[in-house]
Structures are given as structure tokens and as C-alpha cells.
Image 1 (cartoon, rainbow, N blue to C red):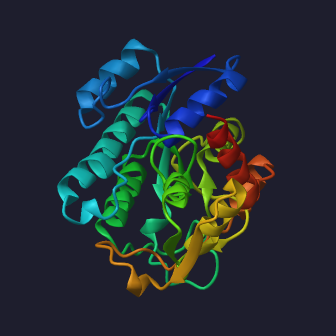
Image 2: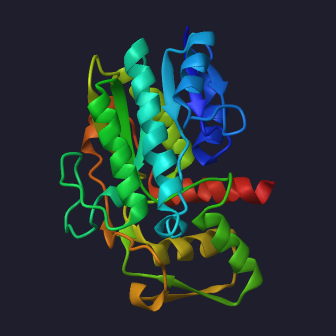
Image 3: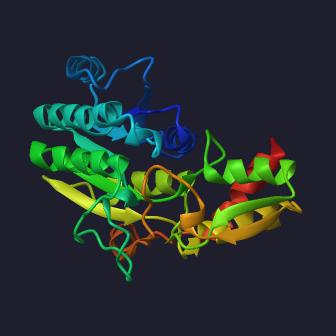
Length: 289
């Protein structure tokens, strides 16, 4: 039995990891923390928690994810996305733990025309993306054993996300405008949680950092995703396609952030669900509440 510390346990991914943990209760015992119970910007607090609870694995599901706010709040974004990550990595290195960390498509420029592989050159275009890349670099530089997963367009039945926003707007409005020229891969946090547990069992590194890309199968635009939400939820709200230039936002978004999923599929043998199938699953869950 191995002990896992899950940080950011009250967020989308944290809640999905909590839901799945029962499937692995004979293998892992999970400890759940959030900002109110463990300040990961405090290296001493992390070390004390890890030592007291005999932690073997840390899954860092905590992050500063307010992309536009980060443009004016870079210091706090850096504290959570880099300083805190470096603290976790240093403690993991010191105690021989495995660190699982979640990063983002925003570390790339979004200017490619083919799906991104793990070794492609990073070139973030936003403060958020830059702080997440700094966190990646802190892990690599620490020398700890780490599984680093980049994901994109995360949503779930928990917290605040694009899918839940579209459901709300779809009930309130006759029409919504959504950008059609940003292409990527939606990711259901429940599928991401499952691949984390599978990677821990199938691809735990002996040393150093191993990178993976993960999203649901298939690609779409934000417009396509919004259309899917309205159709699956039976909402009559029209979705109007607009260009990114018509939608004012402080931070630049990647125009193309499709991932090549070959490496993660080879490592786990996982049949990754198609994005529309996972979207329907979440919408059904939300409508049951």
C-alpha cells in the first residue's frame, strides 16, 4: 500500500481523483489537501506533511488557472504555478518520492500545424503559460522522479469551467457567441484522473522527468464544443461563430493546441474516450443533479 498526497483536492481534477480512488483502494491510500489544509508555497509545511503521513507519491492538482487575471497578477500566478511546484519537487527529491504534475497546452505558442509531441519547443504567449512552463522547469531542475502531464481545455461536473458556463448561458440566453478559430482537445477531468492512476502503475520513472500529453480523442473548436453542449443538453440556444479578434481577452490563447496522444497510449494501453462521448457523460451527470 502506497500513500498518495493529492494537493488541490477541491478542484476539478482533485474531485475526480477522489471519485476514482475507491477503484485503487487496495493499492493506494490517499490524503486530500487544499489551500486551507496545506500551503504548498511553504516548503517546510510540505516536508512536515510528507514526513508525518509517510507519503510515497504526490499528485499536484493545484494551480493558478485564471488565465486573463494572471496578466495583471503575475506574482501570485508564479507563486502557485512555479514556486509551489518547485517546493513539491524539492521535497520529492529529498525523500525519494514520485511527483505527478499537471501542466498545460499554454506552454506552446499555438502556431504549429501538426499535433504537439512532448519534445516540441515551448514558447508561451501569456503570463499564465510562462508560469506553468517555469513550474515544469523547476521539476526538471530538481532531479526528482516525476510524471509531467500536459493537458488542455479541462472540464468536469465540478467547479467552474467552459461546459458548465455554456449550460448556464444556454438556459439564460437565446444566443451565445463563441470563437471558432481556436482548435484543441477538450479533456474530461475524470479521464485525466484515470490516466494518472494508470501511469503511476505502468510508467513510474526510476529517475528524472517523463512528459506525457493527454486530452480526449478528437479535435474541435470552442464553437464546436459549445454546439455540442447545447445539442446534448437539449437547449435551444443558438451558437454564433466569431473570430478571436472579435472576443476581447487580456491573455493570448493558443490558436492550435492539439496534442499527439501516441506516447500516453503506448505507455498505458488506454482506450482514450472520444471528446463527444465524455462530454455527453458529464452533461448527463449534471442534469441528474
